[in-house]
Length: 460
Image 1 (cartoon, helix red, strand yellow):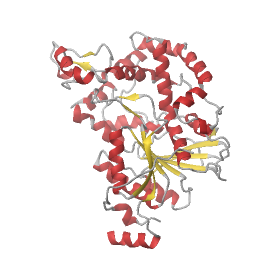
Image 2 (cartoon, rainbow, N blue to C red; image 1 turned 135 degrees about the vertical axis):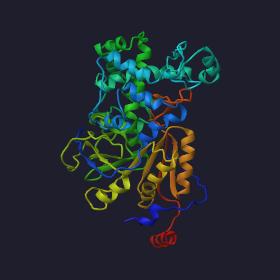
Image 3 (tube, one colour; image 1 turned 90 degrees about the vertical axis):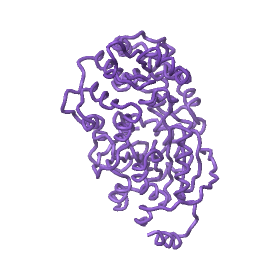
Image 4 (cartoon, rainbow, N blue to C red; image 1 turned 180 degrees about the horizontal axis):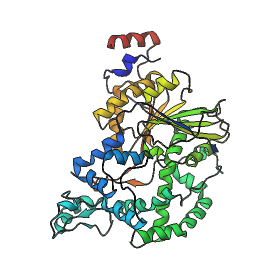
């Protein structure tokens, strides 16, 4: 067991590291969600941080969603049933209410309730994605908005097209890979491999009644087919980015997926983004990435794991060729003590954290510290992803200060291609999920076990 004192405290080390960027050499059986002690929530911190840029925005969102409190909002994210009037009479009302949550002046931050009778919020005619309370604010904001306007056009379309994923009307192409795994090094080669199947899938969605209903419900002109097809491709990469990023990590870190009994991947800090709308089939692509694998078990661990994420009744042995998903609600170091150290579950072959965010908040860093030290001290192959180069630099600095041995970092070949708008700061440059990665293994301090124990005791 890793020394508890080391997992609670750390001492900064010199900030010098020279990581080497490494070149990476289906049936699904979900198992039950396990409840554990709550901890700091990145979902709640993100929601209430809206107030920092736009005072009153969080309450506007709750009002438009017909909710009374954040707790009720969180209940819905977790897959629960709200007690108030959440819900809509028709699709038109739903899309209108959703659009209303974006209605605030991008320049002066005024909400509709704060405007005089002579003013009304109107969107930018180019991107339809930011609002202004008048021509003066729009002119003043143009130097900032012009840099992102074109990209925000994509965001506005994708935000609506995502509804087809929620309803299941957009089913992703799937099936065994026709190319060798080593050839598929990123989205360009993936799209080339799937081109025929993908074209048929996208044409079917474009010509579907669901697509017609969607654009009739939002009451705006339907974009050209090429625009819609581009949006569907971006949404596809957003869904498949996580499973293929896991596969990229397994390849790059040299994890043997052919070992008897199968391989285990822990996704730590998992939230509703990884679990709320995730269907078991979304991870089929991970299995197809490794033909002949002897079973892959992906366990989502986090305080924001959706309550209805998994349904099976037992953690059965992995079957060759299957991808198994399960969830555990709680902090990872607690999960480790309760499930791994007791022998109820196997040690992970790889641990991945999508956007842990520990660089952004002292509270989150405090919550993540025991997990980061545990992964370091147990020498678990670990990969984290971040949204931007700025986050990459900040996260690297923290990991260096924690004495982790960083083995690789760089641009993720399977990053989502769907731009993400910063909700409360619409003119900030959009970011992309899992745009960059960092891999680390053990400590940068090459100490034997006796020296490690002495170093730990000195810090108590």
